[in-house]
Length: 261
Image (cartoon, rainbow, N blue to C red):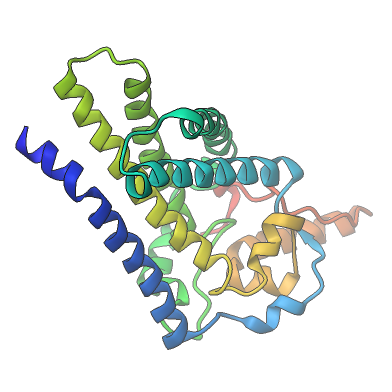
């Protein structure tokens, strides 16, 4: 089929253009608007945001995905041929880890990533990323993080299913070729979204990447970046102190159903 052959031929160019565009957008945003609340990076981290399990599944999923991206793009763009040999073995092992990791992430954070009314307000303010001094409303995860979560799940599912069809060729050659292109392009879009996610979690928000490493944030960080979640945690903390319990644990403490709107 002509259009399948065309997609196959232009994939290296589309990949280069797409990834370059995301990187250029990140650089442009940083130069125009700079980092958000850089003063918060040095605050003492005394509020737990992510449990050890959450940090583990996040690390396993992102590292396995990066391995998939590197091996897949190395074969397609650098070597100019389908995956084979040791690259294929590494890709297959990473794919297994990614499937398990993505399933664990979905089960752990799906409830926290349900959309709420205040997420629309976050979206209208673009999360404060376009120079607004006003903190956008956000629960444990903000509107952008929720959109990222569901996009990753959707594209990840497409990439996984199309990859399985490639591993177990149950269709004719033409259909297999269609699934190959679906796998490639869904993987490309995943890479582009993950690059944006990495930028927002590092340069755009200084110190934020340490959150997923240590699991802890400062109270000021929570108040600025996730004010609704912070309000919920503050009320919970006050209640614990009133009962003689002073341990503050923010991880998973604010499912969407209990967050004030």
